[in-house]
Image (cartoon, rainbow, N blue to C red; front, side, top):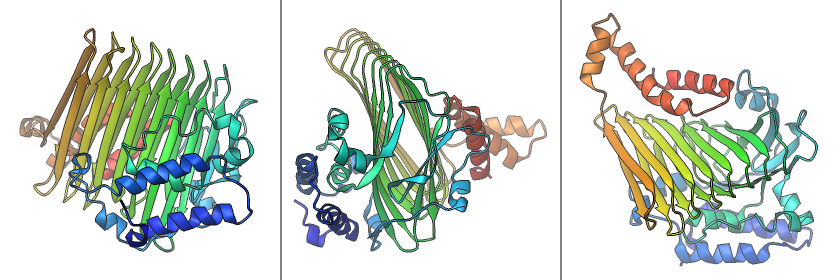
Amino acid sequence: MIDLEKAPALLRHAVEALEGAFSGDGAPDPFADRRQAARTAFESAGLPTTRHEAWKYTDLRPALKPDYAPAGHATATDADLAAGSIDGLDAARVVVVNGRYDADASDLDGLPDGVAVASLAHTLRTSPEVVADTFGAHVDLGRDAFAALNSAFSLDGLYLSVPRGVAVERPIHVVHVLTADQPTFVQTRHLIVVGEAAEARIVETYVVRGDAATFRNDLTEISAGAAAVVRHIRIQDEGDQANGVSLVQTYQERDSDVSTLTFTFATGTVRNNTVMVPAGEGGQSTLGGLYICHGDQLVDTNTLVDHVAPGCQSNELFKGIVTDRSTGVFNGKVFVQREAQQTNAYQQSQGVVLSPDAHHYSKPELEIYADDVKCSHGSTTGAIEPEHVFYLRSRGVSEADARAMLLYAFAHDVVEMVTLEPVRDHLDARIAERLK
């Protein structure tokens, strides 16, 4: 059991911040029992170490070493919004500063009637019955210590709800701003509920204002009703002092179609967890990601697709490019339960290693208990093929340009999974910059 008195500073501050939040105005916490269960789960499990198989290649101790202080109240500046923008993206803007919804900086014009965008903390306190069936309903606290930590001690985040039958034509762009004049820790909790036959496209970008180290522990729950369509994209590009752990947890009812994609460029040590549960018959689940690592950067991707209903399909593609002394990790599991007959599940991980001191580790897994399924997985890791470089050089392309062209083509497979053209253009530009 973890001793919070001897734990890293960010854990002690998380406890103090939560206790202060609910003692200041005397208001009760409607979800106190759930928080306590999460706290118990976290204290029993403790922080993961490299002795845990799922964390074998990811040592969090350097990232947890700074004396992090909890993120305070702040407002977004024009420079923050510009840094988090995507050229040409016509979207409703939702701003979250230091883990708190900033209504003044947000621009919700064009969202249909009935679409709710609000502070999650405010929603939990004032309308607990609205979120009682979805908030924390499907997060496995025993599987993920950081999810338990977030569930116990997160203070705020975003509540987004799209009612039944409503198709949100404009994308929703969530701009996260974190101020870092000193080492700063934030836990953000998002709850996204897309109702039956509703549609939403959500893009998240991240900005750090300041040069100090940061640590995020974010948890996003996405609940998709029957025949709902959800497109979710995250672009992590905060700088080499930005560390953190995140979980995207999806739960899908029948005939829903959900995709979640993560693109990681400039960061420090980052662990991205994704759990998708197509729980209704006929569900479609897509998950993918691209990470391009330089310097001492470490990006660890851990995924689970839990097929619990028949007739569902999942498609998974992750690609990584590592150079210098950086490390990329992929550990993905597809679990097909006995009831999930006629499941189609595909999983692929590919890595390119560009220097002798860089490392890429991949472990795809299938665990199948149904007998009428089509499932496959694959993993490849290696260097650029010399004959491919030679072919391009024989046609007048320089060696540097030839390597960049091959790497761009390798990465672009994941970019093509994005349906929004301005976002694709933004990603293409960042890939080109990272591959110089």
